Image: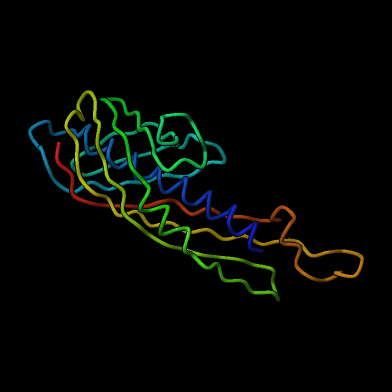
Length: 184
């Protein structure tokens, strides 16, 4: 269970990082150009790779992609940094603190149903903006969660037990949701 839980937590953390990047981008591409600070709300639906779709509302009304990367800017689906590219510019997200919080999660398991779940939250910071998001700064709190149902062994000494090393028969990665105050 530990290995698969970490795999699912890594997916959640990646989604969290991407969600943060999206929030920053949304704040930068605000539909009301006269606003230079305010609340931003971020929605990210994590995929299975390094690139996710992101939507920002509030002081930024924009959408685009959030790409996970490492500190050096190399695309990495388990990266702790995110490059957000929106229709009016972009920015970068530092999700190190969020990932640190998600790494501490202790997934819960119901062995009668072979189901596993966890949720958590943490902060990300925005910076290095371009275009409409030049000068962006701020902190966004991102919340995320995951759930999965694993198969059972069908034969052998472990017949009937949960097979946590196998692929989940059903998994769900909830959307990453966040909000915070930013300045452009």
